[in-house]
Image (cartoon, rainbow, N blue to C red; front, side):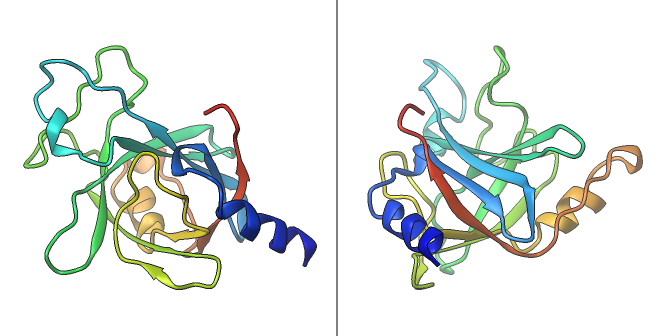
Length: 167
């Protein structure tokens, strides 16, 4: 109980780009947000106003998948678009209308420590949600990857586990 209270308290002062999440029933699956640095002249650079990328790492296979928070839509549904490795020297943000999306899109739901839904995608500098859910992550990792590179993930919340002081 003390650990849960400590994590909930840290959510009050943790910016999203410092947040480290673990999947509740599979703690070897982790998620972190990374600040995206503007790249002059990049097509699509203005299409991703959150200025964040999400990495989901699976320790079992040592694979990392990358996603970009899509700008808020009109239906109050939040999505993340998969992308290629944002740490690659030649990576450029894709256009929001297209570009490489290896795993398509995944749905996103975020909540505070009391499970009140946060009806927006995260943005650089904002406070980190206490819990995030990518309901179709398992489907994306299994059915949208080549048969010899399939990964699995249970449908479960990622919980804020730590707040890095130096992102």
